[in-house]
Length: 525
Image (spheres, rainbow, N blue to C red):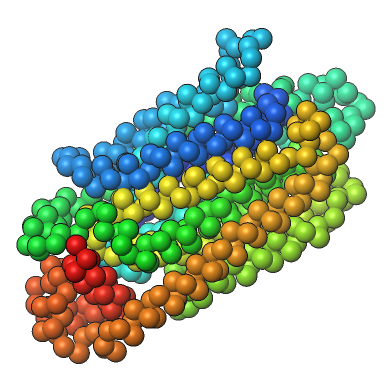
């Protein structure tokens, strides 16, 4: 069974570093993929968006399948850790080729290049999904304590931010200090236009950075596998408890739970808000604010620093304000960032001499980082609350959540690329880029945030309504709890333990909802 007590510090931190390789790759993928294919490979907007869509679609299709088999796998190494290991190998073997100019592809057609990159992208996304789902599914396996689960999500997100910081710092230094061919040619009389452009001569920056990412990521993956012990003893207990019930809890039963769809919608919208802004803020800084090319990395750096600082407060905010108020707080901060993006003026002095004027655009990045940290951690905590003690199908739930997230991100970004006004001129970027990327940074996160708010309200109403259907105090009649709730009966040896657990670890609402869901599953199947 998952532990109800606080995990040792070293085990929490060893778990937290298990997603670093994925985080490093994801930072490069979302922040620099379009930049690389636009300015280095010179792909049209629609083609660059198509490659990102292919990756997101493969990831979306793989996640529920991996989640299903991850729950069914029986392995001496651990059903979660074995999938994590397979994913790590796939990511390490394929990621660097996504950001490398094809060596033997001179004078070849664009469709051939698309096929070339798509093969490596497919392998990478399968590995990324395998690592992500298995790592997330470990949280309910390791502990059933709600505060501990939020803590693990916060540590995990903290390392996500640190990983993004590392990539942003590396790209900042490389883009700021490694001269381009244009700068060599205009040495002594450099123009701002030459200095701000990322071009084919920067291909080595995009090649060596992924190699460093893989090396660092593999080191942290080794720490995770050595330091994280997957609780294997629970599998037999869980299987035994399932066989005692005539109506065992299966993966397809989640589709009969309204809360499952509401949490999935909130999680999908959260990822849309974070990823769309992460993809397009480099282009926003270059084309709308008109800053130099190092601003591509500086903007993401500011976002991740503020998100990292905010991650330390997530556990306490969730504890004292609750899931709903905390998530709404994150939405309010995001809306403030959107307002800033809308009215941000172009930098009239895009040089290092006017420091204050150049720092103003990064204020929106600070708000974006804080809101992203709050929204991501809270939405993941909602997912862990949903799974609760149904850890036998926990990986499927995370896979289903990730399916909606990946597919929605790929489709949204491809639609943005197809609607680019410069496509009609057969150019990657033209004079219309200025207004278009501003609209993307405003309406891109604004739409999902509105939908997320609707989902949050509906989830609140659903939980309150389910709570009213049960007694006010779920621990008043201990004997009835034992007899009518198979979920609690399988996890507690006596009614006294149920009462103690209710008072110490569960809120009344959570017990009522779990009881309602459990009974509804038993009657409907």
